[in-house]
Each structure stands twice: as structure tokens, then as C-alpha cells.
View (spheres, one colour):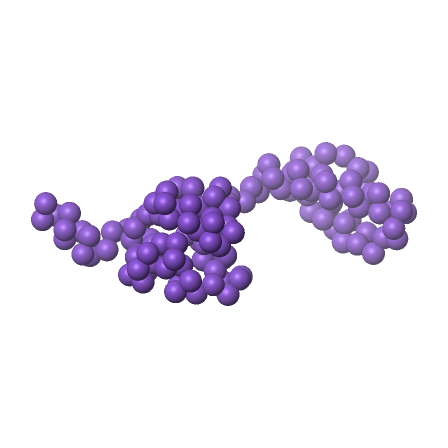
Length: 133
């Protein structure tokens, strides 16, 4: 395969197939250099044609919890009561700036991950309260 920009799915598939054949290239070999170039071209094509959106804040928080063994109880110091933690994780209430600041400080999670937009669905209690007012 001639090295050239990847402009179509066919080019992409061809590049992936060649990368697979080069995975065991010896260090410092011309094959390793070719592999590096192909991987760079593939990454550029994927970021343009198949972008992966970052997770929303709650999904990111849940992943952070799962990957580090953090429990809902551990979130209480940052978010509040057990009920408040449940509301946040069930997307019934949005994270506040104060909660985000505490999560960043207490759990070493990036603020960039937590400040994104996401939708909340009000709980039945919140919906009834809003209608009564």
C-alpha cells in the first residue's frame, strides 16, 4: 500500500488491514516507521469522520466511581445527603458549582469533565412541587 491521506472508508479499511500486518514490526525498522505513519493517518481520519463525543458529566462521574471503587456513600462529602447523591446520579437534579468544586478537590476528577451540559429529568416529587406553585 502506498502511504497517502485517508479519504474514504475503503482507504481506511485498507490502512487498518496494513496496520494489523505491521503490529509486530521490529523497533527502529522501516516497518515500524511505516506503522507510525499509518497510525497517525488513521487517527486523523477517525477524529474527522468518526468523532467520539466526551461523556456527559454524570456518565463520567459514574465511570470514575466504578474505576476507582468509589461508592455513593463516598460522594456524600462532596454532594450532600444520600438522597441528594441519588438525585444527581439519577439525573433528577443538576450538579451545582459547589458540588463540582468539592468533587474536584475530594475525588481528583477534572472539572472539565463535570461542567458539561446534560439533561435532567425531574423526579415525581419535584414535578408535583413545581405544579403546586
